[in-house]
Image 1 (cartoon, rainbow, N blue to C red):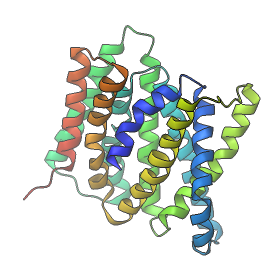
Image 2: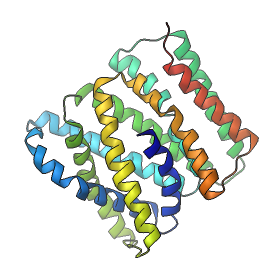
Image 3: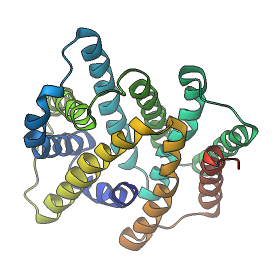
Length: 273
């Protein structure tokens, strides 16, 4: 899961050169949903029928599509490495939400981790203060917060659902507003380019379909804050692929901010012996 998500940031960055963010997200959702249709048909009996669960599931679906849109819009203006760091502040938000809503424990180490993580985000903001990409940083932080909200929502209300059914529902419901936005904006296009198709397949089948199902499988068994710590290494992998494949470089402030943010996430998930 970590490899699929980490390497996907460079793939998405290249894919966004072909189409606008909304269209790229729509293409990813459609391809992922089509791949998962046979598995959904096999497991369709596990689809919830009661109204309360369906409403909670629809809420999760709408939050999810908002997260992916925020990532795509932010990434269209930002480097893949820094974009990954900002998105994976999600564990910090999960911790802040899991304490009151899931009654998970608070320790001094975790509080120190949250503080360090947000200081790292502040350093990243200071580095971007004079640039036009400050708005993209805000968008990606909003996406991180919404992702954390979806984690808490799933853990509290939908933890009993089958992971594949949950994710297929997210994709199916998300396609509707994405298609509407793409059609009304006049940007409903599909580039017939081998590179774009290869990137779309990897980003859709690998990161969005397989990666997210693994995420839900793990989330059913682990604490929200503990599992969110598994994303610690994702930004580092994203930075490596961004440097290796896209030639991205980082300022001293970006590296410092990233190190503080990742260090905070590490402290947030370290276990006392």
